[in-house]
Length: 620
Image: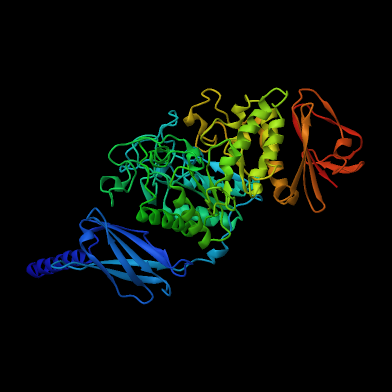
């Protein structure tokens, strides 16, 4: 009995060893994308295969509807790139055989999934939406069990350190979606949640170390999918924060890159000049262009070389993979003007071809509308550059909003900056598609920018929620989160949302421990956000505005028989406002309703404005 048992065990072990060697899973570390879908608009797919010596093998595929077009060796023998045509392929698995003389054939099972619904109809965000921007590590810790992993280079949780990890995660967002919906937000933009296995400051997410892996400290791929799907079911949208310009220095491919030019300046690190205008400047030198677009963002973020066609294809397919996997409602692309701009055109158009109603917004941190408008789809540029980018972040408005509310009212300053900002909309093809905001995760909070003045902060929010464009609100604005103790401290700008951690004395979700001012601000925003949801005059209407006078600025939003009048009053005292000046759009004796108080009134001759306030009237 004993001899027979040992013989059986030996036979089983031999079969296991041979099967493992034959399948080659120990030799192939990864195939990316890890899966794809049948029935895509573009039937082409390029696989990156990485494994010890795999570049010395040749692939073979015998599967109906799957055609192997070509394969490419890389500079490193540990990579192989395979071009496939999936036109006619059905959902299911097929085998890729890797063959080499005098070696066992390696097999890899690849999955083509069925698409979950008609993704050509996948809608993106637009001016009907209000986006809630979250730094996930600082929003809510919904699952403390994922706070620490042995494989993480940065260990531990330390909420007293602004630049350490605090433990917020996907579950924390999931558990508070009802709060966001009840407030009136319609889209959620978390900063990147892909693996950032960096030794320091890994909480922020922008130094990605694996483009197909969710950082386990945020949760699992299944939880990320649940977030996207749940938001869809709630008639809300998930926006993906993409990073195609750079990766983290600890990315798995940095130890053995496929090609010598996989990243820019691989042997002599050079940091970008950040001179973004070289993209448009007709006089820019090639030296300046090369260093701007090829230099590393910082020394810990290698600059990806999108002029390498394999890198370009990899990044395009990765973005599409996340759209499809998470049922996204949009992409916000980080550091938009830094990659190769011809790649950006290919990248945006590839995504928009696959998802015609989708939305992408690019971060162009410039205060010049001529520079910002250059990137938007349909803009006629002197150099002939075109792209499929729907939206651009309106940094000019952000700066003008801050200055308009802070500055003393005198010639060329104060509210006139908001007036002239809108006048500059002549630079844009579609101003209503611009993303507008008072602050974000990279700048001081709007409450602090306005010197912690609650009245001015309310005015800023009122303006963002009533002017043209797609509003984005940074988490915590609704409870007056600020960073005045350290105005330039990015860690403090990304402070923990109170109530997101067990034991928090303050709870912004439930208002426990909040001050009277915080509760009032929250109610103010909730009322405006929910009123805005179905108000076509605001979300898709036209604008007429009147030059600021005496510390007041008046503008109208209108569509069909719907009309809204907005008055910003910066004066510290009650201020009379004569109405005859607005006769072309506001007939005398018009009936109106105050959106914030519900009070009805008749607009005759003049009205009296409350000090430092925004008056929002629905005209009947």
